[in-house]
Length: 194
Image 1 (cartoon, rainbow, N blue to C red):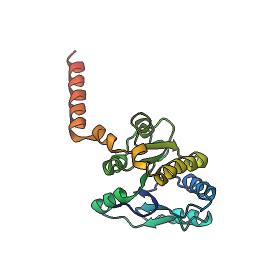
Image 2 (tube, rainbow, N blue to C red):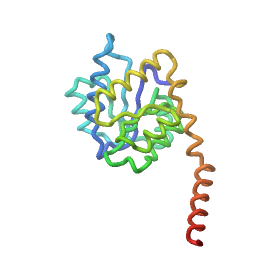
Image 3 (tube, rainbow, N blue to C red):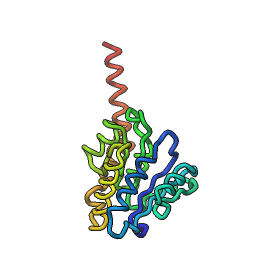
């Protein structure tokens, strides 16, 4: 069952991640709506981040943002599944890596809002295969626009249709990963043999 209202969920550590631009984007987004977007909730689940809540308080976002203690894997997956969408904030310089958290998000089928460095793997996947939106991690305006797009689609009952991430599951299916891995190994063996 879905949580009431529009709920965006971030799971995991915010270490080496600047959440200020996201909160500034959220502030712009909440101020644009005539109803101040009171049905919007942003849940950060993981180790409590005092600076996150301090910044939220300074921006007057306490009513929208919560920081919650870590849960076990099953509980966390359930919370993500019940959310309207999942929030991914990539650390600077992480664009070479592919965060396992993204795969966790995709397994829930929820749309993903990714704040990423330019040209990251995640932004390429979302641009080519759908499943969500990727925006510049440091741009409050871009973040506000992405929140607006998700929120408008949610209001119209079209969020899942427009940004469904179920289609991405096949990219990370165990059989697919294993066959890609075997293919890489056999290519390396041929190169060594040559």
